[in-house]
Each structure stands twice: as structure tokens, then as C-alpha cells.
Length: 588
Image (tube, rainbow, N blue to C red; front, top):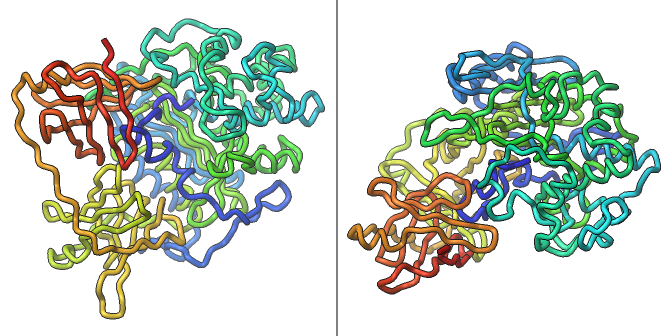
């Protein structure tokens, strides 16, 4: 499940999903299948200016690189992670940093058992595909064949459940879902009852939306076909044959007793994560595992030991509306340093995880973390991507700043137009170059070479483009550091004016306080001391500042809140972010 990522990247969740996979798709003409799994090549390779350049990754170099990153990302006396990097069955790094139990001081080890969240979907998908291979069902079968009386079930196919195109409402996005207690066990049928009557997001096959409900239904299909609980079937069919003895159902007392503790951050403090009974994630996220077992899985799945060649190709190949999302069946496709990469992330209360595989090079990277909150992009997705690049011998550039004088820095200011609705604004603030995309957060940039800047996530970067006379004409932006990058021209548009805060009396601030809702979304406006803040759903609060008694702005993201005018409490507030608007109504 991706419980921790609902609307987590921007107030409206318009920047993109939590997963970096969606930002850098591999070329559409790059086939990957069970017979030919040769990595694509590219002439545009970014090689670090470090000692890595021109050298293949070794166990020693990966160990040094990983341990340095782990020390930077995780404190030894706080929740942390277990990490494994391998080339084929050769383990290049296997280690852990941080605590399994903060209260007792018990350290994490590479043998620690973690909740893996949505990585569970990969197992559920493969398990169902085994049944397809056995002739027990077809991907084109209607859901109604296995879950009678499910609304519109005769028009929803098994394939649409697997690739998130069914339109079934994701139950974790139903208003109030996470507000109440989540510690009561639920059967698959009881889980389905929580979302079966919710209004669909779209007609089956008409669009794509990440959907935990769809994979709860995948579990229901497995149970209908096999006559046993989905997790028992996966154990007998996948885990036992592959020797994955530390992988299983999180609600099983055997595994529950082995799990490390999960944590969250609350106002910068480590606190125990919200309790959730592990029956509730269902087949969408109910499994636990270790880095060693996930390496066994990666090698078995991608080297032809689990599925037939044609079935494997179906699993990793997006079709229909899933093409734009680069999503197969429990597999997301992306690139790392221009080479194809397959994997899936996971997030559930107290835990975050990433499982990646680079074909051709046969590289596996597994990161399992017992904290569901990360600052400054220091999470499993970033760690895993950087480690995959390092294992290729092509690490991302180091965030080592060089000196850039003020006059040169000023040259880069301007509006770089991406399209009619979106631009990147570069502006010097407090002696540092910053970048802010329309509707997005402002980032302080790190100059790492002449005319080259790195974002604080350590992945995104751009190079400044100049004409023959040396004048700045644009940038080449590398999302996730991936070649070849996109050219973005600098326009003659003036820099947007910086918004100015105006002081308001406490009575004016009190007027806008309250909870506002639109459909299954809700936003709370509240005072934290003397600072007004807004909080959408379960994401972190964002400071808001008054431009007038009815109009407030944010600096964390490029967004405004316009409250209905009048002396009484406002009945509505309109959120405007990156040209997208949403009107929310006050909840009595």
C-alpha cells in the first residue's frame, strides 16, 4: 500500500506520484522480455567526477558508497533501514543502520523483517498469473465471475485490476478512512464491503489511477479460484518453492512476532506509527519480508524461474491507459542512467520500501525502512536509484558545491517556459540560486560545475544553455538525472513578483479556521502558536501567509487559498495550485 504517499508531494497532489518511476519512462521501442533482457544503451551518459569514472563497481566501492549514504540518511540512534545490492547472485553490499526498536535500543540487522507495503502487489500479480498459466482463469474474465454482485463487475476485467485501470475507488482515499481505529481484523469480503459502493473514479479501462482496492480484489479472485486465502496460496506457490522462509502474511502471529517496530515523525520527533491490523491492507500490501528473500524473488522472477516467457513479458509491459503510467502488473518501468529498470515501491504506516531490478546487468537493489517519514527526499526511492546507478559504475554526481560569484548567478535568473501552463522560475535569494516550477515547491540549487546545478534530492539537475556569444538561452533539465534531458528555453517574461505578507489581527485569522472538504478530500486550517497553517488529508501541515483578509499564499508550494468574503466564517475556500483549482466547503 502507499498509505504514506496520499497527496504527499504537493497540496493537491498534482506534481506526481511518490514514485520516481513515473518521471523517467524508458523509450517505448525498448523491449524487455524473458528471452532478451539486454539493457538499452545510450550515448548520453552522465559520469560522476569522482573516482568512480571509468571503473566498474566492486564490492569494496559499493560498500564505501552505501555506508556513506546510510550515515547521511539515517541516524544510528533512530529508525533506519536494511539495504542489499547485488549483481546476479553476487552480493555487493548487505547491511543495516538504525534501530529496530527505539525504546529498547535494539539495532536493525540485514536479517530484520519489515512490512513491505505495495511490493506485495508484485507477488499477488505473479500468483494470479500462475493461475492464468494453469488455465484456471483468463485476464479477460470479468470480475463478476469471481466476486458476484460487485457493482459493474461484469464490465471490469482481471487485467484492469492488475494494471490499475478498473476505476474502482481506492479505499484508502475514501473520506475518513484513516481517521478511525484500524486495529480490527477484516476478511477479504469485509474489506470489499468498505469500497464496493463508492462512486468509481472512471469507467473500466478509461483511465489509470493507482488503486489498492483493485489489488484487494486480485486477492479475492485468487481466493475464488483456489478456495484458500490469498496469502496461503502465495506461500505454497511462491514462497516455499523459492526458499523465502522470512516472507509471509503480516497478520500471521509467526511473522508479527518477528517484525521490527515501525515509526513516524511528528513535528520532527520519532513516534510509534499509527496502528493498522495487517489484515486491512489485504493483497495490496499485507506482506512482510527481508532483503535476502527479496533478492531471491528478484532473481527468480526476472530470470524465468517463476513465469513463462510470454507471461513475464505481459507482466512487465504496460498496455492501454497504463502505458502513460509505465505500469505493468505489479511492476513499474523506468530507467536508471538510460538503462531500463523494473521495480515497485511500498509504503504503509511505519514503513517504506523499494525493490528494483536492472535487466541485462542483473542488478538488484532492495531498501527496507522502518520509518514512514523522510526529510529532504532521503527515502528508499532515492537511495535505491542512487545505488542502482552506482552498481552500474555510473553514479549520480556528488552534491559538492563550487563557488559561483554573484554576477554569474544573476545571469541565470529568469522564466524558463516548459509549456503554456508551466514554467521554471530561477531566482537568486539570499545569495543562492533557487528554482520553482509552477505549482511546486521552491528548491535551493547546488552548483556542482560551471553552468550545472543539482537539486537537493541529489537526482534532478540541469545544465545551462548558452548561445555563441555566451548569453544564457535556456536549460537542459534531467529529471532523476536521466539522459538525454529536456531542453527548456528561457523567455523574456519578467520574474514574477514575490508575494508580500500583510499583518492581520488575531480575529481575522480566527475567521478562516476550520475544516473544509471536497469529495473525499479535506483540509484543516489551524493556528500553530501564531502561525497559520493548512493541512490536506494526512500530509504535513504547510505554513500560509496573508496577502489580504481573504487571500493567503504559501511559500512551500506555489499555491494560494482564497476564502469567501464577508464578516462571518467563510463558507468556502478555493485552492489554486499551478493553474488547477479546487473549491472546498466548510464542514460544520
